[in-house]
Image 1 (spheres, helix red, strand yellow):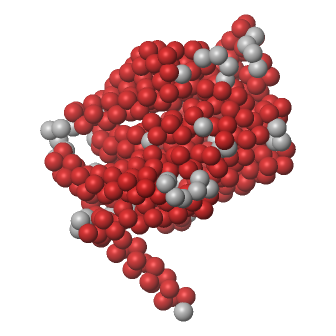
Image 2 (cartoon, rainbow, N blue to C red):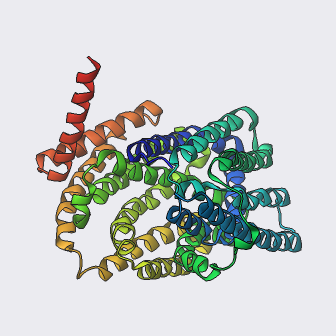
Image 3 (spheres, rainbow, N blue to C red):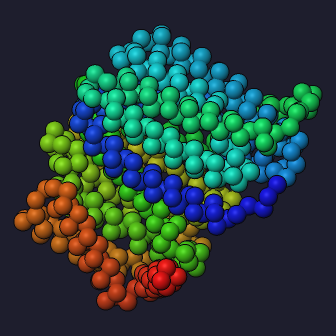
Length: 473
């Protein structure tokens, strides 16, 4: 096989991350208006329930399959065996949890039965997905290209076919089927990397314990993402509260994707600053204050006047951007690479328990506000717990010292945004002006405060831009 082009894979991933940010910005306002808060709430609640079955159908096979293929990627026969072992295991687990999901749906016969039935497609998608195989081969171009094409297809489907709240089933089915088409489209590449395998060499269940071992550290993280939506559905009448909560969380998730993308594109010297955690605070703090500051002007034009409640929800969940930024440093970038996944999982489980308990207390009284508060507190709790565990290994003073600069600049930016609310309209142009002016003030203050992290990385980016301009002349 050809030697992998790391630079090309990097470009593919950056381009796709930009698409991930742009497409929700285009579709979310439209879907919010045509389906309404109730329709969004139904979709959010049902997909959250189905997600539990999808998670268990997947188990740890994505990580396992990618790892096994990467070990033998240069040997056509061995990688074919690794493929079929993983694929057969995924088919078996998918079949089992399809059956369990069917028993759940048809035994309870819940409201919005058609939406539940459509989710069978999403569970089948687990068996259809072979992206783990191409990840193991480091063929990221095929995955990213496929994802980009079908994201655009999904975008076209939404704008051409989804017209009002009666199209909820069509929206759900269209999204599920386009996902399936994306998975199946990768199959055409498989023959190029596969060879005929002797059935006696296959043993799809020999590493069941290993697969479960890889699954357990991630289960808490995955289930945690859907628990709040399910509990809102349990404790509230109708689905609008779930719709409001989902709308706020969608914006937060878009911002978190921006954090990831900016870390990759804008901070080339990330390793040097790992022990200080500068990168994550540098990005998380202004985004938190920014979300809080523009919520009142952003929500009316983005989601519409019927989503008034999302203004407050967005302010509450904006805290999550900083909490997850901290978690990335202490958890993903420190505990996991140092082979302490169990400790990382324990902290996430603690957060899940805190989230569940607060949901039980707050959702019956405060509805979606309660779920937002519970999520914010739980994420902050994980950050504090992880910082406590690494207090003797990471120099927390080095983390806190630069963060003070970011906090000061962030508070000043928030003050400016609040002031601008007094005379700027709640419109697209008004929000864009707020974003530009707020970001400008934030970065200007970092220059005044002589923040070396920002100045050095800004200098690197400016120099790269100058080189590109010179080449183009």
